[in-house]
Length: 424
Image 1: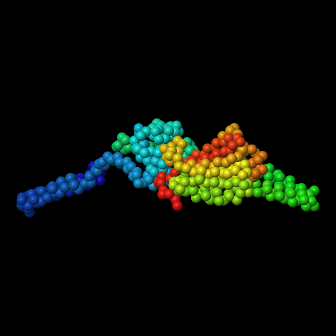
Image 2: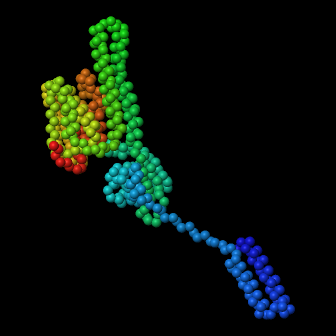
Image 3: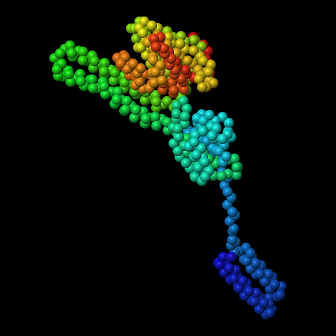
C-alpha cells in the first residue's frame, strides 16, 4: 500500500477511537442512552471499514501486452505499386505478387518455389541471407531475356505472424534498365562520333585550306572541291542522324510496344517513298501482302524505319534493272514461342554477301564492302538500327545470301492477339 494511503488510514483510526471513548463517557454520564451510543459506534466503525477497503487508492496491475497481429498488405495495394513485388513465406514459396511481377516473371499460380520463377543466384542468395539473420539486402541484378534488363533488388524480412505459411520476405525489383542504357548510349555516341567523324572533318579542313591557299583563284578546283565538301558534310549529317536514331532505340529497347500496326499500310508507304530512287536504277519494288494479314504489336514509325532501311539497301546494292520483292505472310508459330507471327521478306537480285560476313552484318559500322558502302553514302548503322528495333518488338531478323544470286532479309514479328477482318 502506498505510504500516503497508510497515513490516511492511521489518522482515521485514531479519530474514530477517540470518538468511541467520548461515546463511552457520555453513556456513563447518562447523556446518551446505550442504544443511541451503539448506533453511533456502528456508524463510526463502518466508516473506518469503508476507508480501509475503498477509500484508499488501489494498485492496478498492468495486464501483459498482447502481441499485435501482423496486418498483411491487401492485394489491391500491391497491384497499385509500379515496381514488381513478390512476397515469400519461410519456405521460400511465393504467397503474393502484383501485376508488374506477374508480367516480368511469368508467375501464373502461387505457392511455387521462387527458384521456379526467378532462377537467379544473387536473388536466391539474398533470400538465404535474410533467413540467416540479416534484415535487408540490396543487390544489382541483370535478368536475361530477348533484351537483358537491369534491376536493383531490395529484399527485406517481415515480422512473424501466427500463420506459419504467411509472408516473411518481401522482394522489390526497381527497373534501372533505361538509366543504364542511357549511360551506355552516351558513352557509345561519344566514342563512335569521335571515330567516324574524324575522316570527313579532316577532309573538309584540307579542302578549306586548299581553297584559301593555292586554289583560291582556280574556279575549276573550287567547284570540284565544293562538291566533295558538300558530299562529306551530308555524310556527317547522315552519320549523326543515324547515331541519334540508334541511341533512341537502344534506350527504350527493353520496353516492348503495345500498339496494333497493319504492315500492309507500312509496306505500301515504304514502296511509294522509295519508288523514285528505284526508278533511277531501272528497278521496281513489288509488294505482295495478303488482305487478311493480321496486325502486329509494334510502333508504326519504327517499323517504317526497319523496312525503309531494308528496301533502301536492296535498291542501293542490288543490280540495276532487277526487281525488289517484298513478301508478307502469316506464320503459325514464331521461333521459340507458341504464338502466331507475321513474316516480311525483302528479296533482291544483287551480288550477294559472302557467308563470312553474315554473322557480323548487324554490328554498328561493320561493312561487308567498306569501299562500296562509303561510296554509296552508307553509314554502317542501318542494319544495327534494324536489329535493335526488331529486338524491341520481340521479333527475329534473319539473313540468307548466295554470292552471285542475291540476298533475303526476313523480319518476323509477333501478331496481335485478336484477329481482324480482311482489309478493303
